[in-house]
Image 1 (cartoon, rainbow, N blue to C red):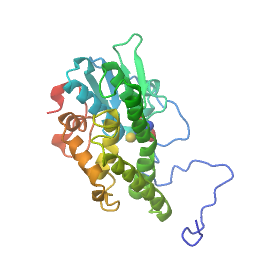
Image 2: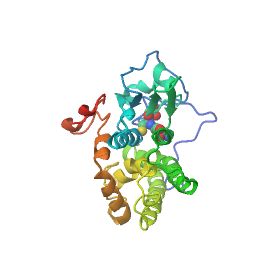
Image 3: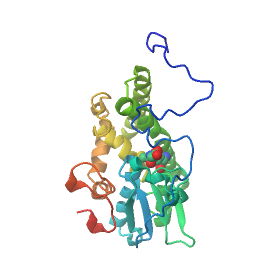
Image 4: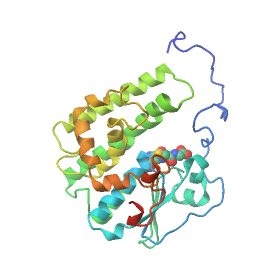
Length: 283
Ligand SMILES: N[C@@H](CCC(=O)N[C@@H](CS)C(=O)NCC(=O)O)C(=O)O
């Protein structure tokens, strides 16, 4: 980074200190420590699965999975989806932290096991549900490895899209060319990885729709549709033809449409499903 492109002004202190006045969109919820900030139990509904979430791409992965399982006839996949308002710090309640020590949505409890099973990390939830119901994840070792490879690829890649590109392009209080260039380069490379893979396959891991697609669609499918960060034109998302075809195919699925609406307190009011406690909540 040259001094001309990035004028001097900030010299890191010898020991970093948090700056709550940094103007960043998430300055009020970011902390350099983990753990609960307040005592509050989580609500519990009547279904086997209790999901504590918000309709962001990471949250929607799991609600799409539940809707896919229910559409396949697995009635034991009934779930209550409770709204966690991360802007208000709900993820730092003692109840939430007991389910997810990492204080990020989504967090899941399976009450059908004794003792109850807690699961954090959206990818772990998809694997847990796929194994529990025997769906969307092949059992044959090679086919399973291919699905796992794409699933882990998604989990490792999305932070560059969200925390890197999305943050600096859409949310940071100032536009920093160095950061936007760095992450736009990486996100376009990721889109090309997907595009080249989807040139010869219907779905990410082959001929079948799997948890790899369910994990990847809410991030890269939404990006391809121009729904993330207002960056469709900037990243020329239309040029990734195979990603476009795959995203259309997945977005046409009824369970994907249903799951994408759950825990959404934004957008058109008639489309919001702030909480889901029965199939009828998603009209
Ligand atoms: N790797 C995690 C990421 C979860 C995540 O980043 N969640 C965000 C919303 S999409 C969150 O809860 N942020 C609140 C915070 O950072 O305090 C997963 O996939 O479950």
